[in-house]
Image 1 (spheres, rainbow, N blue to C red):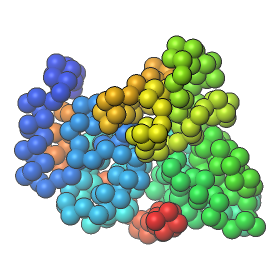
Image 2 (image 1 turned 45 degrees about the vertical axis):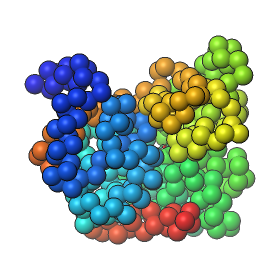
Image 3 (image 1 turned 30 degrees about the vertical axis):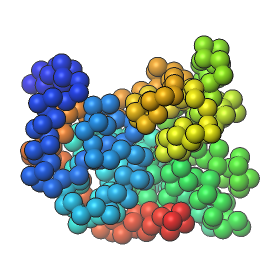
Image 4 (image 1 turned 180 degrees about the vertical axis):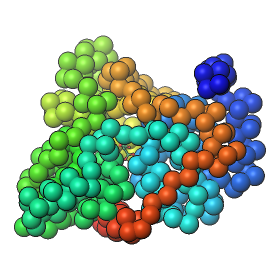
Length: 317
Ligand code: CIZ
């Protein structure tokens, strides 16, 4: 059944009848469709808003819509559910997880606190609600440096759960950061050799890479930024007109759409997060029809995780 539905989506890459069905369902339910920058192009195109997880959660919280369809991975839908528990937050594909979020459990964070008493726990948004609930403050790839800089200088920082992002924030702020043994396989797979090969193929192109990449790759880049930062930078009329992009290739669709006169080349064709690509138009239509899969976060995790997310929002408002 699913295989044949996926076939239909491939025959109709711009949406077609499926898009019409989604539009009718969305209007009937007053639903808002949000798509992360790493989603499939046709999913980005049907969304009301695209963005990084923080932007999308903020939009969800500020919207009047009673139903939010979050096209992304579980931790993102959880963040939206934490920030707006009164809404129905739907994750079209419930098995869309994140290996980085799986790299830390609440129990492990509690053990780390026992090992380094007095440390501040900074949790990357790519963590479960339970891990956020054990943390003092959250951060995203867009604000990790600002958040690390903002916390008490006298205390070491346990940075959960991406060691490359933690290393990057420590190298900029010179703060005492204890790194977690976790990394995003999609970003970690990018090697310096890939970047150098692309530079040779596209002379004069500016290299933008995500801070989840390895330090060697970050050192070779002209710009280090999360997806929101890359989009903002590429749109700057003063910036280059040709870019090599070191993040999930889903972002290339949005970069080209927003900057039709500029060139964007993936640093590696292999930078494809498999779980970010699970969601199809069929899944979105099914999610709206069945009101599935509702993501909820129960107390006391909800209030504690919300406090960590709000601490970040206050710091970066
Ligand atoms: O915060 C996000 O959305 C993630 C995981 C990456 C990014 O840079 O957008």
